[in-house]
Amino acid sequence: MSHNEEFQRRMVEDRRLVILRYLDEEPDGRMSVSLMTDALEIMSHRVPRTTVLDDAGYLEGLGLLRVEYVGDVPMLRVTGRGAEVAKGLREVPGVKKPARGE
Image 1 (cartoon, rainbow, N blue to C red):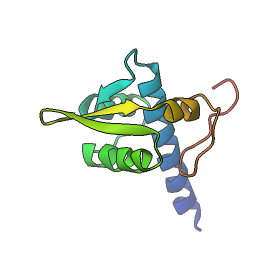
Image 2 (tube, one colour):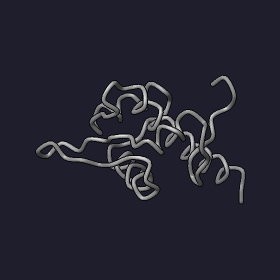
Image 3 (cartoon, rainbow, N blue to C red):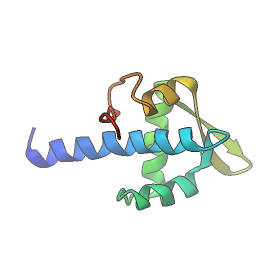
Image 4 (cartoon, one colour):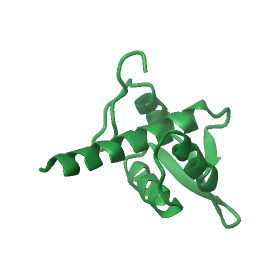
């Protein structure tokens, strides 16, 4: 794997962790994909909504979040397992494990 490919893999894993952390910090554990796209940009992950939905699909496949629709608006909702990953209590493939004190 080239250095660039390794960097890209780490960026994806970090972005997925950031998604779970933002959701875990919400009182109801959910956020719209549009707002999540804006939140990720604050954390230096400037990606289109389609990428956020792709990551959400991956995380949903692992049981870490659910994609729900309110009308046409896709909403992301963290699961208990996803909250554990966000806090570093559980490790899963494809999601960065938070460093201690992070």
